Image 1: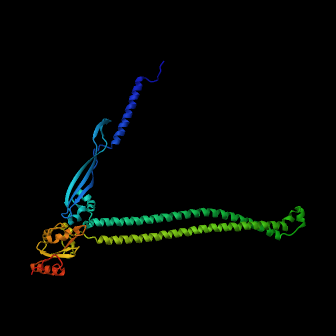
Image 2: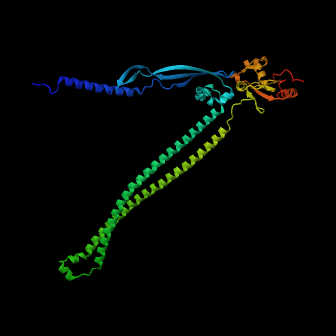
Image 3: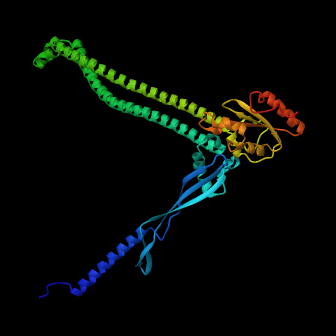
Length: 422
């Protein structure tokens, strides 16, 4: 007797077929999970460190490059095509070092720098300097624009929240109106029925009052006619009319109350709509004020000084390291802000001469050194500031120097040892 309806061979073939189908399915899932044949993703960058020398403006920047990659561990074949099976994603880090001199001119063009990394992280580099005086105009404008947009967004959120609250109140009022309109409709139907009953009963009273007693009718109706026109019936009907009128009055009072609720809700809706319109006007006015204020602020932003200007006032000494070299014939004034002492000098190359007085912001000239090292300033780089007056001739140099020594009293109460060239 056969124990099975299928042979062992067929069973093995079926099992092999099922296993193969399962393997194909698993391979398809694996191929799909691999996400294609990409071995590595585009690198990501971050600023790792920024070392800035304020005296030389030399800036050393380290960028961290992080890249995800994976390796092939084996291959699988699907429909006669070999597919790679990759490892889990790994991370490969690399430090990229760059060095630049952040002159004022370069700071003003850092956001369009030819080096892609410096260009991309220009704002972060500026922030790492932690010095407001070195913030270029594009950087300040960008942050003013962002600050403006934040205020505009905050204004918009405030209005939308206010509007949403009022619209919810309006929605609640409309729902209340719908509910009380439905109640009012039912009450009016009941009032109409009561009035209709009253009218019928009043008509009966009228007929009773107009009816004429008749013995024949009374006999013919077995006395019913007499009852129908009797005062007793009239009184009974009048009492029922009175009760109906009381119901009518009570119902009318409820109707009036419902109508008042509806009226109050409509009034509230009008008030809420006016509130929204008023708030919108207020917010629009604030938006205009914000735009005008920030347009003014942005228009007042000026680039960092590149060269010595004829009408320039005193410039912090530490800012001179960022000015482009220019051979200037003229007089210069060095001001100690703490002691309010001045030194006036002249040179055929003022910027070169200043480098003989100072290395960055540290005095090389002994006449300034004592005040520098004994200064109470926490940041001594802020101690001295410079002003330059350009001249054309030797006579102009001598005359200007003498006049400046006199104007700033730098001979008697400053650093000058003479009253100038005679």
